[in-house]
Amino acid sequence: MIYTSKRIKRISVSQTLEMAKRSSELREKGIDIIDMSVGQPDFPTPAHIKQAAKEAIDKNYTFYTPVPGYSDLRQTIVDKLKRENNLDYTKDQIVVSNGAKQALANTILTLINKGDEILVPTPYWVSYAELINLAEGKKKLIKTDISTNYKATAEQIDKAITNKTKILVYSSPSNPAGSVYSKEELSAIADVIKKHEDIYIISDEIYEHINFIGKHESIAQFEDIKDRVILINGVSKGYAMTGWRLGYMAAPKWIADSCIKLQGQYTSGASSISQKAALAALSGDNIYTMGMNQAFKERRDLIVSLMQDIPGFKTYIPEGAFYIFPEVKEYFGKINNYINIKNSSDLSMYLLNEAHVATVPGTAFGNPNSIRFSFAIGKDKITLAMERIKKALNTLSN
Image (cartoon, rainbow, N blue to C red; front, side):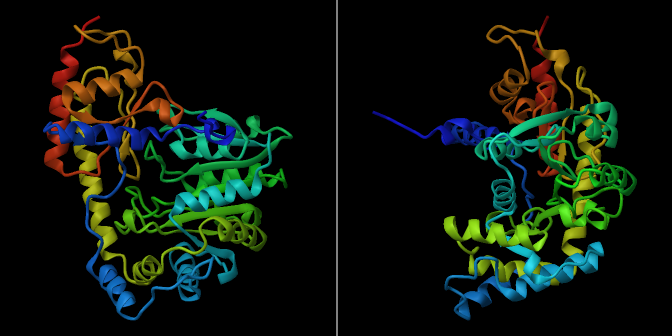
């Protein structure tokens, strides 16, 4: 008899990774797929970071690491948070993990009991929902739409709070919408949370360095609530280090200690080589990062202009990250000789099979009327993808 736990049955397969898998299967058949589904920079890791990793191997940094991370890396993170964000932390408030995703999982599993309520503005990153399911918490969705660049307001959050609310989780810049919360917007949200001493904020800032409108703002800057903010970040996006799997949290010490306890039982410390590479990334200048940011901004401008020329796509201008999340519901109900487009999942699959462009349906992010496109690919591929999509959509009829 095949048996899996209720825990596994509560969570779903990542639709982002599932779409990447289907793309790979078609590619293995010789089909030219343009992959706009996976969110990772197409740039190589900077040379000085790779060199630091090579030196770490030569110096025999090949043994188990401390669960919260090497002391010098944690101090470097403290220094980075002060230098770039004007935030004051100590080493014992930093926990280094196997990617920002593990830092998020550690936090949610540490703070949530069965039935606790987590406020989640939609659209949200796919794993928020599943990590909440894993912890047996309850999602309370706060609906946003394209008219506000998919940002939740302080008023919406205030109205959503109940006596069961334990956490507000959000990202800025956001995945999948590229929304960026301003200091004023975050200040208003902080004022709401300040009134509820039992509510914590998970602030996912992994896209911090991919920002097209100016200085990154963290909600941890507001002293009245800082002791209830868990800041999540890492090196994957800003330093082109997705495969190194290195993330971190900055949090009140009691939360950090609890996450260390949890992580110590199921993965222990992060890779020694990745940690030394991350130390080089976070202690160096951000010239490479700024260059990537400029390239992503140019790609953003290109895909926005091309997408605005596609009938039925309702677009906006993302302010950060490398995604655009247009509304596509005008295509629901359209057909051709082999498919009836009923929702964004159908449309996303149609674009994969007909236009050979991989995307992710909005249902994965809590917004069934949209599709996520990653523009972390070259300009030529973006142009070709939009041409293919426009052509494929023209074959649909009412």
